Structure formats: structure tokens, C-alpha cells
Length: 186
Image 1 (spheres, rainbow, N blue to C red):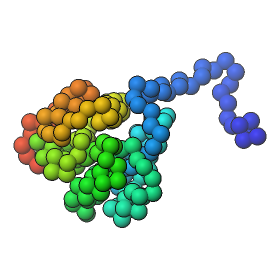
Image 2: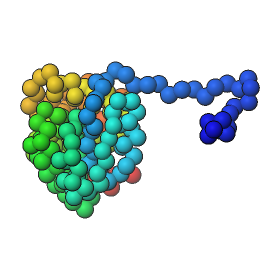
Image 3: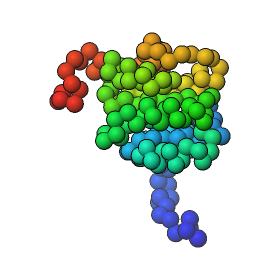
């Protein structure tokens, strides 16, 4: 009944263009654990039909969700008022999900700033702000494949190569040679 009451385009009107389904990344049977204050990332990840997300906003919420099930991946971005929370989350996640990739999402979009922080956490992958959505999905999908098939130790070189190979068109690259604090740049 609800479908019948929905607004329909007039006869002869062009149908709305369908969104392409992302299919060139691994399908996941387990959810992705997202530790990040902003819920907007959930919709981006769920562009992939088989990717489902458990979203936690605080370390307390994360700690409660972590033992509830097996996860395919962790993406962690520390809340602004809880520096170091992403590192704590990565270490706790790895204990319960040793085969799943861990992603450190830096607040600063520069590799030279966020890379060492990701490395200190032992994250498998570094993600930065300013990545195009389709490249974000490609990067995370590639990380899933690499983690399953190869033993790649986290390093600044591995972070850089993954981003170069999957996120080449993303605008964050334009910020890499800036030395001033990034949030003061207009």
C-alpha cells in the first residue's frame, strides 16, 4: 500500500538515474567497526551493498561493541577530546580480530603528520581526510585483500604506496608540502 501511495514520475518522464553499485571490492559477511564521532562515514561505507557498519562515537561505546561479534575491519578516528583513543581502539581490536585490517584515520590530511601517528598505533592502513569516496572504497577494499593474502608490516612506505595506488586523484595530495599547521590555512 505504501508503495502505491508513493509519488511517481508522470508517464513519459525520464526515470531517475540509478546509482552505480560498487562491486569491485571484497564482499563482507562481518560488519565494519567504525570508531568516529561523525556518522557521515557510515553512509559512505554502506555504498558497498555487502558492507555493514557498527558505528561507535566514543571509546566507551567502542569498548561495549567490540566483544559483541567478529568484525571484518576497524576504522578509528580519535574524538577531538580524547587524543590517543584511536590507538587504544586499534590495540584492543587487534586482540579480538587478529586477521582483520585496522585503519587509522588521521585528523591531519598530511602523510608526514598522520603517518607517524598511524605507525605508532600499529595500524595496517592510514586514511586521511580529502579522499574521494570511490577512492576511499577502493583503498579499503584493497587493504582487505592485502591483509588476507600478504603479510605487509605497517610502515610509512606501505601507507604511502597504498594511497598512491588507490587514491591518486584525491585532493589531499595538494596539502602534502605545507609546513604550517593545517587548520590555520585558509
